[in-house]
Length: 128
Image 1: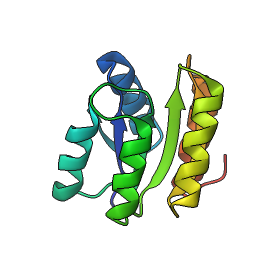
Image 2: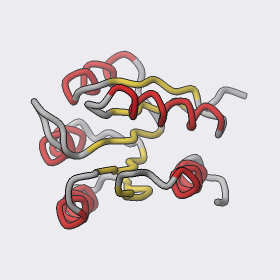
Image 3: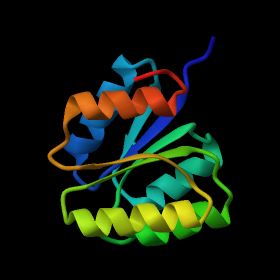
């Protein structure tokens, strides 16, 4: 059986790698990328089942990325993360849901790794 594919997107490379490594421990095949444009390019090559998305990044923020994901009708479950402001994270989550994107969860940084693992399990269709 093939493993679900996950893209971890964070402008902090260490954070993207940490999320990807944790996802691999949870049974995913994972790739870390560091920008919204790179995420969008990756979608054309291999659609992920899950996207872990830092919503505050240079070049393209979570709002623009969610608009583009909705426009492309991306079916991946989203896990939104941010260290910026909980209200902004909540607003991006509401926008994603209103855009008919599948949101599996929203987490603040610094990440609670147990909470991330639980959301990764939910996104994969397993119980937390």
